[in-house]
Amino acid sequence: MAQKTRVIGITGGIGSGKSFISNEIERRGYAVYNSDLNARNIIDTDPHVIQQLKQLFGNDIYSSNGLNRPAVAERVFANKQLLQQMNAIVHPAVKQHFITWAASQKQPVFLEAAILVESGFYVFCDEVVLVTAPLDIRINRVLKRDNTTREAIIQRIRNQMPDETLRQYATVVVNNDETKSISDLVDELFRKLEMLK
Image (tube, rainbow, N blue to C red; front, top):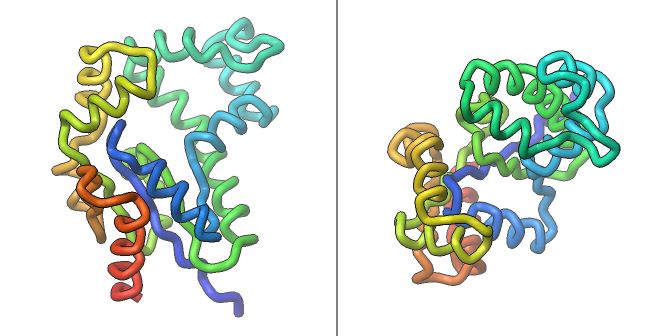
């Protein structure tokens, strides 16, 4: 009988540094599934998903360049029910893609997802790592990274599940407050995960 794949989820709010943690883990030779990137790919290439999204938003939502993301974002942020309908199309496809991917990887695998808990992906995880950072650091990171305003970042943070809620699902919390290097944080994380085996 095949051994169950150990899955370690990585989540955190915008600007927390979860992608830096994931990138360092991947650099060390571990398999990391980036759910956001894979969801984008599935949305642009999976015929079944494309057809369902066209039914939901209209045929003109796709062009030769793929999904018109700004138009979709504008509509779903103004309409929570529409967002839920879109998620009901995309999340099952991403979950199936992840299951297939994870089965082909060596142990353990890491699953990075900004909405790990909200999407229900956490149920696939043996452990959940929450990456946190102080609010001012998060805002400054996103200001440097994205072409956006402080107000827009704060609104995005408000729209995400708060760290206090995410902590209820977390097995390990990584405080990425810039007092330690990403490499040191991952070393510390691996020690904690080893204790959880």
